[in-house]
Image (tube, rainbow, N blue to C red; front, top):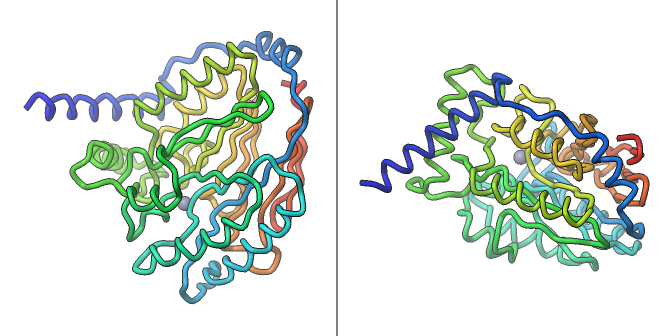
Length: 324
Ligand SMILES: [Zn+2]
C-alpha cells in the first residue's frame, strides 16, 4: 500500500515539474558567464576525435518513400570503413539502431555484427525504435551495457550518455513498472495540455537520472572538465514534436552547469543545430534516410573549438569554445 501511494506521489511530482517547466515557471538562476570563461582558461587537454552516427534504423524489410531500412546495413558498413581509417577515441551511435517489429532481435544481431567491426571503442545511446518488439533487458544484454545512462572520460573531457526513454510507454519497460506508469501519466497530461511532443514514441528523463546528471556535472565542474552530452531525443527546439518531454528542465541543467559545451542527439531525422547559453545542440541526420549520400560524422575535440567533419547529409560545422 505504501509503495503504491509513494509511486503515485512520484508520478504527481514528475507531472507537476513537467507542467511548470513547459509553462516556463521553473525558476532559473542566471548563467554564470564569468565562471564559464575561467573554465576555458583552466582546462588542459590534447585534441582527439570520435565518430558519431544516428538513427541507422536497420530492418530486413522493404523501403518506404523516405526510409531505406535494408540499405542502412551497407551505409553503416561504409561509415565503419571510414572510421577505421582514422585514429578515433571511440565511436558512438545515438539510438534507433534498428526499426523494431517482428524481426527486431535478428535485425539487432545483424546490425551489431557490422557495428562491431569498428576498431575503436563503441558506445550506445538507447532510442525508441530499439524497444519495438523487444524488451529492455534483452536490448541491453545484446548491446553489452549494464546501465542506460552512464559517463566516461577521454583526455580530461567528460562524456555523458542520457536515456530519454527512461519514463516512457515505448522504453521497453514492463507495463507494471514505475518507469512505464510514470511515462503513461506524463503522456496523458501532455495530450490533455495539447503539447506538440505528446507522442508515445517520445519519453522523459526520470528523477533518479536527473539527480545523477547533476552529480556528474558538479564533479566535472570541480575537476575543471568540459562535458559533452549524448541523448536520442532532442532538447531543442522546445515545443516541437520530437523533443524530450522534460527538455526544458534538462537543458536548463546543462546550460547552468558552466561546463557542458555540446549536446548531440538523433531522433529528428532532418538534423538541426542551435546554440543557446554556451551549449551547442546538434541533431545528427538519420542514416536510414540517406540512401545515396550516407550520414555520419567525425567530431574533432580541440582545445578551443569543436569541429564536426560531416559525411554525406551531415554538414561541416565548427564552434569556437572561447566565445561562450
Ligand atoms: Zn527515435
